[in-house]
Length: 372
Length: 247
Ligand SMILES: Nc1ncnc2c1ncn2[C@@H]1O[C@H](COP(=O)(O)OP(=O)(O)O)[C@@H](O)[C@H]1O
Ligand SMILES: [Mg+2]
Image (cartoon, rainbow over all chains, first blue to last red; front, side):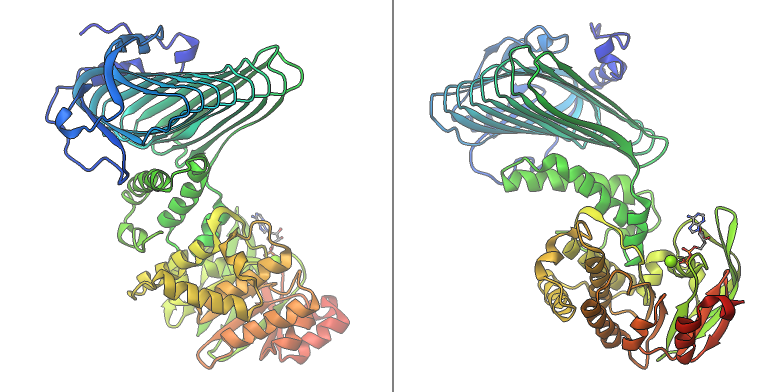
């Protein structure tokens, strides 16, 4: 298969891994994974197997399947075709929507749109499992005062997942997106958020957990184009073994976007010195009355805290896991729904147990004791 | 219970403990006093198994077991408790979670059954009450935003919860006002004064020893015990200073 993929010579793909995308697309198709991927929550459900709706396992309710545009983005445009669409009328509240993407191999493309009219509300949880290359584009339009929360769990065991998100956040609207990369697939997240109405709020953050030789990256930009906007980009990257996690996050404040309040916090944690975390925070501010707090740091676990915990009886691997969980937890704080937040924490815990305890001889002791 | 023989230890290639010997039997409280930089905290860290503190010769036997062969968490499970001179802050991990993990990890290492959440909370609440620590502080992240005195109190609450056989308390009295000193002193007596337990009490001041009466007092200077005696030695140090005595 010939793929027209971006080159790492392009600045925005500097840390990208197009070769991993090509390799994932070349994986043979197989059986769809079985598993209980839905969270125990009421609402609409959709299962896509290799990008195709599995009607038997879906209960779409207010979600429609429709021809959609994937936009101009180099990966996003490949998704143009049939996808899922959520449109919510003014002041209406949609039930929770859960979408499970099962990829069995090869490549699959799926576009999506979420359009909330003024005052409408919706909440979406997406889970990615399986293997192969899953490529997605999601276009989000929030009318005045609309509220969307979206939580994305990337749990593919191999292959590659690429997400292209484009969002317009209208006056007084609120967009909260949280992404967790806790599978073993390569990841590329491309986000372009425009805060286009006054007094709007946009939060786009999450955690990328990488191990072995895995690479995950996020390239995000939030553009403030209106008055009094608030945005938050809170990202945590944890890298083990020889893996690489990369975050390039940008805040752009247009000339007339006065009183913008932007928070950007990018933090990386190296579980091994052979791992890499790349952070690229960027602020581009053309307005003069703006508050933008930002921080970007990469470090290792606090050795003093580790010894303190060990001296109280906690084995080394468990102490590492507890400290790492606390580190990652900052990125999930904005998830309002307890069930969803618990699922994120559980996914991260499972990752930690595998990444930290497994290679250690003390696995039995380290895994002991329920942690809730 | 604890027998330290001719212990030499270094940090970054620099020898700090230079042939330290000390024996503490069950039922005894030993005070260790000495000038700044003598190696008191180093002794505590070496006994606790802190990475980077390398023992180059000598031995430490605890209840007949080679303590130096155990990993730090195994020492805790064996009944050794190290009260830190500077307790560490752990953002994002609550005291309750930390202590429950700690206690249950110790119990797991000893092949004992884990305590349930309810059982643990009852125990933690009781110990916090006894040490006059507000129950709400148990829910806060470990030592984050605690005053110096609150951190030391928290060390004692932790000691009460894990109920060790042997405690090394490194300047637990520093940073305490006179009321807190009495509460902490009472706590040490209540938790550790027992025929089958022993304490190494590292301190600069006589005042803690008014509450926790030592059976023996040792002067540690330049990495060695240079003098040992009864509790009257502490009074002598208080009035005369280390200079003449340690020489
Ligand atoms: N991490 C370290 N690296 C190098 N030297 C150290 C380190 N920690 C302590 N020391 C040195 O070891 C000696 C003993 O320190 P310490 O045990 O803290 O003394 P005390 O507790 O008796 O005041 C001091 O000279 C101190 O400077
Ligand atoms: Mg000291």
